[in-house]
Each structure stands twice: as C-alpha cells, then as structure tokens.
Length: 496
Image 1 (cartoon, rainbow, N blue to C red):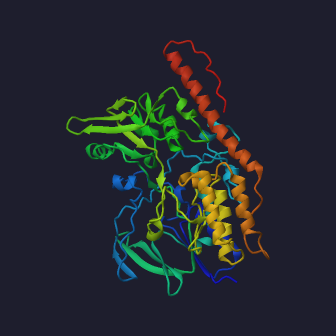
Image 2 (image 1 turned 90 degrees about the vertical axis):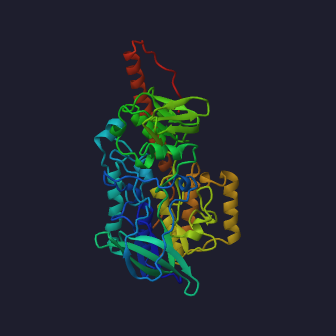
Image 3 (image 1 turned 60 degrees about the vertical axis):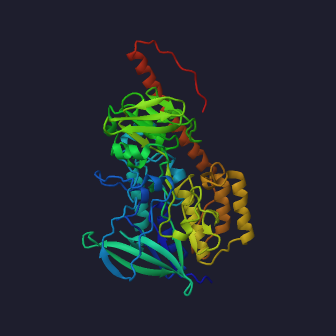
C-alpha cells in the first residue's frame, strides 16, 4: 500500500491535464490538486491578447538559459503583498493561423480522439481529410479533458508555484504559491503540502537566443527590431519589410515560408545547412527565400541609422527591419532551484524514463521530452507515474536506472537528442506501458499496445506538409518565371 495520499500537479497544459486524469482514475489518493498560472487549461495552446508584448529582458541570461529566476519568497506566509512585476515568460507562442504539425490521431490521447473540425485554410492546403487541427480545437480539447469529470474543482487557476521544497522532517513537499488579488494590484502568498509532485509545466515558454556578437547593441540601438519566434503573430506585420530569420527546425521554416509572400524579397533565412529530420529543406526551396550561412556578428549605429548582419561566408544583409530568432526554448524550473542547477544541455540528468528523478522518485515529470507524438506520450508517462505513486508498480533497481541513462547517452548523446524519442517511438511506448501494467479492479487508465498505424499516420502527415511546400514552391517558381518573361521548365524531381 502506497504511503502517498496527496499529489500536486504543476501546470495544466496537455501534460498536466492527462496527469490529472491518470491520478484520478487510480482512485488511490485522498487529495489531488493542480496549479495553473493561466486563467484556464491549455498551456502553450492558449492565445494571448493581441496587444501582449513579448519581452527579452536580459539577452545574456537568455543565452545562458537562466533568465527565469526564482522570486524572493516572503519571510512570513500567508501574506498579501504588492504585486510582483518580474517578467515570467508566461505568454504563449500561439498566432491566429497556427495549426498542429503532426497527425491528429497520432497526437491524441488514446481514449479521446480529436474532433474532425478543420478550418477552410487547412483544407485548402492539405485537403478535406487534413490530419492537422487549428489551435482553438486543441485548446478546447484540453479544457474538455479537465472539465468532463469535474476535475476543474481540483484546480487552482491564476496560481503560480513559486517554490517547491522537500521538508525533511515531514517528508512532504511544501509548495509556496502566489495568486494575484485586488484586481492584480496585490499578490496573495500561501503554502500547501503534498506527498508527491508531478511537474508538467512544459518547456516551450522561455525563449533561447544564442550569444551573437553585436546583438545586445542592436537591441539597444533599434528597439523592437529583435524578436524571438515566440512573438510572431501576423505576416502583415512584415509586409514589404526586410527580414532575417534564424533557425531551420520547426518555427524557422514555417515563418520563412509564410513571409516569402509578404516580406521584401528575398526573405533571408539563416540555416547553416542543418534542417529538421522530419521536414528537411523543402520549405526553404521557395524562390523568394535566400539561405545564408551562420551569423558571425551584427553591427549597428543608432546615430547613422545603419545596421547589418554579417555571415561567416563574408556576405551581409544591411538595413534589415526585423531579425527573428527561431532558435528554440530553454527548459527552466524556477520553482525547483536546486534541481534546475543540474540541468545541462537543456535536459535534466538522472531522470529515469524521462519521468522519475532517480534520487527523489516522489518528484515526477511528465512531458520532459523533445518531441514525438506529444500528447500521446504524455499519457503513457502520466499513467506510469500515477500507477507508481498509487503503489501499484515498482521501479527497477537504481543500478538498472543508471544503466538506462548511460546506454541512452551512448546512443543519443548528452543533450536535447537524449530526450527525443525519434525514431524508436514504439520501443519507448511499449517499455513504459509494460512498466505501468494494466488497471486492477477497474482502477487506473488503460494503455493500449502501440499501433503501427500511429507511426504510419505520423510519417504520412509530414509527407503532406512536404507536398504542400513543394506544390506552393512550384507555383511560386512558375509565377516568378512568368514575371521575368522566362519559359519555365519542370525542375528535377526530389525524392522524399
């Protein structure tokens, strides 16, 4: 019988929502609570007000992956104090036309299919059977999961977990919590204690911009010219503007491709010859996109009104209007400062199966992976964590956990690729499912065996996006040729 009777979930995006459901279905806990700093469930699928302005308060700390700092904790709690104004990076990446970029069936939780709702723009790009969904569908999907069984009664919204610390005397986790009151002019601070925590706060919140010589001076000399892709909202903002976009993973190609028909031609994309393993360079084959080598440095002069991006191959782009860094995010844990100190290369060491902290297995993580089936893998992780906390399964010996990590480092390296499930999706899903086992006496959420169709749908959805890029690129090439009075010939076919 487990001694864990109270569990807190930190964050209520898709990982937190499915964790809440998995815990509730175990029927083993006296207290389940979830804390979400936004006003509703949804995580990074919530849209911010249009006038919300993203901040990049300290480029040095952003480059060091340490800008999201722990707030000072009041000496006496509970307390009502003036509202703390430290920027917390809680705004999201959602822009009006955002759609998912993987197949809905492969992405969805196993028992809750996505609605068949599709936007007209989605259908135009990908057909009537488009596997992608608009962000509003995803947001509602997450909120429905929370609300359908009354889980909203377990949630404290507009509540930020500012500190989570283990009390050695009681062996309980003490959460220090903050919530705005009095129309946001003040903060109410209080504490609650739990036997265990599930951390599901996501890692697409704090923007990462690598150190670039001259970038700080540019930001000072020309405020607003520097952006992270997280701030991207509407292509109209960049109409007829000279734009430099840095990055070739997910957001970089999406933004470059979209702006190819809005920004001044060409759009300047810094790709360094490296592309996402799913999508390759197809988005960058648009005739209005010019690819560049890595940036060597940036120069700017406020008095003269000049600025230039200099590339390692000796070329430059002068007098640009925007430079957008689509360079990813940093995983930060400001409420777990001691744990956060151990994060290296944007991953947390000693995390068995990407879930259990080896020296403190009552501290569980759901969603601490780079990519791959997203919601569905969160479900597998949440069920295993809930089953373990309920005392229904055991983890292997520490020696085996250490070997698991050592073997994975040897195979994938000690960085972000360590947390990527690609290409061995089935292997991970099945290992987690077998560790979790089946529900007993109707208690617990069941995990089905991995279906090969999920992987097929996953791969086919990527091919659909590639086909869309190729089709639109072809139209753009013909249009450009016609405008230049050139008789257009078919380009060589490209094998996917």
